[in-house]
Image 1 (cartoon, rainbow, N blue to C red):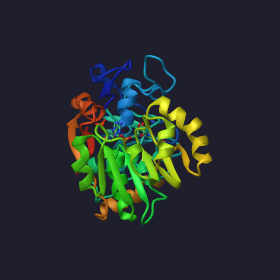
Image 2: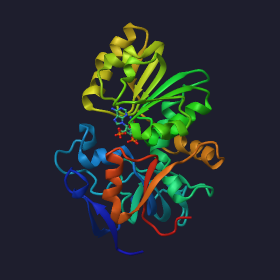
Image 3: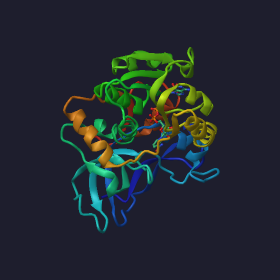
Image 4: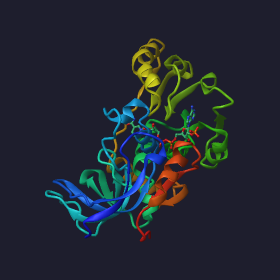
Length: 325
Ligand SMILES: NC(=O)c1ccc[n+]([C@@H]2O[C@H](COP(=O)([O-])OP(=O)(O)OC[C@H]3O[C@@H](n4cnc5c(N)ncnc54)[C@H](OP(=O)(O)O)[C@@H]3O)[C@@H](O)[C@H]2O)c1
């Protein structure tokens, strides 16, 4: 095991050019944690938000400098050392998971909480497995009450979580309307969306009504969301602007309740219990994993820009290792 490794680091919030490739010490796993040799790390909007420090929650209570110098949550790789008390993994195991609290996936090695990881199915490549944990958990949780005939709208449906969410809802028999920019409409149709809306052209809060709304990018007044719901309908925001999210948990909740609807945040329960059943469905061929593009570790800034600027059709993955089977 080397003492140092290559990692993409940053010391202040900003655009992708604040990132640089550096040699840093290989971390040591503490109790309950494992050291993973990273093979692939997929990108999520949360990586971009933590890079630029916006919305405010992405700053994780810091002002200028980030809490974690190395970003990258959704990892897949091999266990190379285990900390005290870890019983579920041994050296050599192939694993994947969402390391959102510790991050560190844009590096050759990273320490992860063992409870956040699962054994990688043989039927998925490392690249495919890395695409699942965070976006998959959001999609699974966000569509869990969707059933046959449910009229569901997914705002931001062309991103990573939307990619899985559209497919899960369609398999459950829902009628799915998906909203995103013009470049993603065909992509959302190809995933099964029944109707698509270009948010630059049409205001989805003037359409509907819908029984369920899953909002990955809440940016509007909470009263708009109440309006779009059918009686008994439920709106859940996963991410978005601070202003919108604060409005949703205050005014939105009360206004919706007065009108017999429900508006609130979806606090996603992450971890293997969410993404492992989804991975099984991907292995079985029931759900597709669409990989938009792969990048080398040195090209991580470019990969982040592709996600942050909304150009990705499916998941963007940084391939760190050279053994990708
Ligand atoms: N609540 C929780 O527990 C929890 C846990 C983990 C992550 N999150 C959050 O979940 C959110 C979604 O993640 P993700 O990885 O699925 O994001 P993503 O892959 O970037 O998908 C978001 C999509 O929304 C589109 N979009 C942007 N502005 C829009 C608008 N005004 N109207 C409609 N669509 C719009 C984006 O495309 P364009 O930009 O090109 O338009 C993109 O296709 C993030 O904010 C993340 O922080 C929440």
